[in-house]
Image (cartoon, rainbow over all chains, first blue to last red; front, side, top):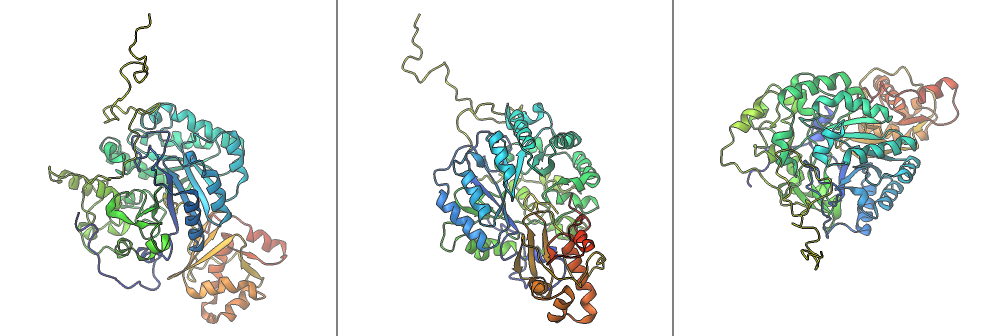
Length: 414
Length: 132
């Protein structure tokens, strides 16, 4: 892959003063926060998993290595980390690392499907300062949720929400990826969240990981995007978005937030094996900046990697810079463009001005969308595996008969 | 501002520009709040409140010095003088400090009159319009 990044001026000088957003484009000495995926292991097999998680990687950071990363984040004053996976709580040392981070001035916000949040853990969390919990839910009803996250996952998540609410946990979040199937449920999500005394957080579906396989079918339509934008303008004060929808700002009114791609500038991802990527939606070798196990550790990757230096130059060329809305959306999401095979200096595939659809339609028939070589998806069947109709699913490898592997299989005992 | 990535509610950037400085008494002794960390950056500094999870930005190096040395002086006013803030710019610095007080990034240092205490613990919504 050549010409990975949009054309930028070489090594520009950082301006003094001016808007913060312009300062952020030049990067910071340390990330404001970063995403840290602790494991690729997951009990679920969500069809849109951004990290293609399922099976643990044998090279995952050990407890001691993870502690060393936390020590480094403390030295760099990274105030908090967004911990995810995979399902982070299936790591046996998860609770230890949580305490270790908090004890070293690194706040933790973790995302979970709720599988381990029984009453005792919920009470433990409620007693812990500086920890935030996000329960993932991608449908306001079991039907919509379980179609993408798997049978029983709605029940697991709502049980966790109940436990947190009963334990008196404050400010926990319900985290929703907006899809074509649930875009009409925003008010229901809000009501559900309010019922548990939680806070709603909605984010954008990216064509990353297994999300690439279902993006065409699941990403919100143009009409839904407009409704989402209106809904955010009306309800945005009470809903977290993670700056996720800044591409919608090109509808007219800027949404609250950064309105800037923070990849490699103010955020990044550390994956379970210690690889550092520009952002959590960009697990691909083109966006790999280094590894925390390398000489100089995370700090050196953040401050000296060539990739991040490139990302910290403002975009100066490309189709989008000529658009009247460029200042509002800044060309949108880098990962969304990349994984749909669009040029990085062109429009976002979900560009609300319609340029993305045109660009998608204009793709060469021979265009092969980039595929990540990192895939930890379950290879065998998973209990409750989602069966999104028409979705390419994991081939059913179930034994043809009960106990096929048993020496007695097939033996007629009558 | 809220992030996928950056989920900390962001208090309005503290810069010596705006004029919203009504709810802050510069004659009192102040300090950086105990649960607040400050990280120098090329443009000034990032400040983060571990308790209310607010993030704010100090948009000038002088303001960084002011916040860091508040605790060394008998009042916020005295700090501004000591840091060499020109008289004409002092009202702007006072409003920046008022923003920081509203988002609880700085706090009154010793026991203070009830009114001031009330202000220091007041709601932060104005300082963080995008906060919920």
